[in-house]
Length: 387
Length: 223
Image 1 (tube, each protein chain N blue to C red):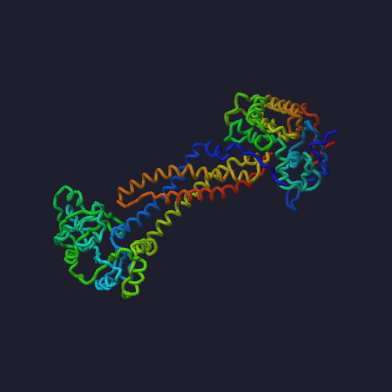
Image 2: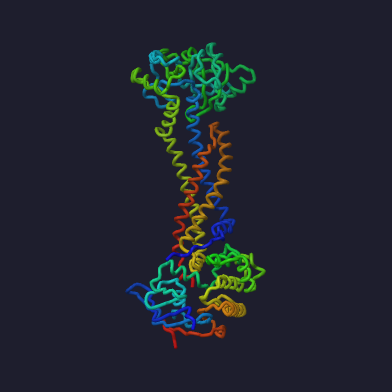
């Protein structure tokens, strides 16, 4: 025998959740707080991956050659320039473009304090960086550099001074250089700013380096050539001390390095989990108190003929209502904090749609799990006890 | 002759585990006819509340026969018990209204359980007017006096026109005047709706509303 179908018209869960405004406010504040924790952690993690691969994505090339043990641009090893000439022998390769990369100390032209910066040495004739990023023409004069206008302010008011038409002369790696243009890449977790200069100037900045060594080789392919196929062919043709990557896998390797080989991905991932747990505990406390306070009323409903399943459903609905109601202020506050964090760190912190979906799913899961645990308390509602 | 609403035969009930077992009901025989008001009295611990919870399908029958509204409760499945409960009105010592619902919403909760109920809005209003709360439809329980809350509870218990109402000391928390008013209201509604009432009470002042008063002592019905 089945319990006959029943129309439930009174939205019990909604009425119960919204009746006590103070308790509702506390619950929503707790959920919003958990949301903020998750959004901030995921925001920093996202900014890490975005910022860390901006240089990779600014480079122009259909394929990329790096040293075989390449993991990250920020501790890159060099390989012989001859490998590029060998790659050029491949009929599908139209041109090659060497790129030198090394960190150096930039002296703030105002305060004279030194700070590490990432220097790229390029050939001024060939645009290694996308045209939108930098115009390399001024680099044909020696000891001239392009400065990253999105770099952290600790390097000094370089971009603003240059834009105002004044000369910016300072020391880079103990050698006097002059800023002759600006480009835009921005700071990452590994470098606070970037410099582009010519190969000639690069070798003057780092006199201990051999001109026969480079860090990155950019390959342009002939029209119609399939990069994957050429990649495979080059891998067979070149010695095993280098590897050939697509631009996507070049950036992906960098992201994998920071996510896996450093503690950073773990730390932000853990932070997200902590946010989830904090939220789950808060929601559980609220719902448990709700059930405990209304135990005799729930028992009364059971006596009247409401089923355990119905009451279980009410508590779960309460959890879901709290999840959705708490998510809204959580998102609004997080967006505000993103702006604050972006201005303070200059990291590219943004709110992609899939993160919104992820945190909403996590929030709903968090509230549903808490509700399921809190609903076990319903078993204590024994209608025989209320007589 | 109509079928009785409640037929109890040779009902025994025990509490506790084997070693600490204590029998609280002995060989209870009782019939309640439709529309009849039966009062159960007796000292505390005599088993009258246990009997009430058994009749209400809130406790499982251990031994004996207990038929409520044509359903044998001995060995009944949980869904069968739920179905019987939906045909009974319950009034408790404390009103047990849902604090986060208004008077109107509390009564609706009872009506919404009846799949055949139509015109729920009007019926809710009518029954609340019948208990004298036509002006307090949208008040929350915290705004009502003790007597008014108990009247909402009566409206909730009688709204779906149950054939049987079980009441456990409905006047205990009330002063004599509102207590009297509450039982007279129950008596009136039971006459109008032909609802049988089985009420546990200590209150000697209300014995006159009963068709029959049954005294219990030490788990037995005194004859």
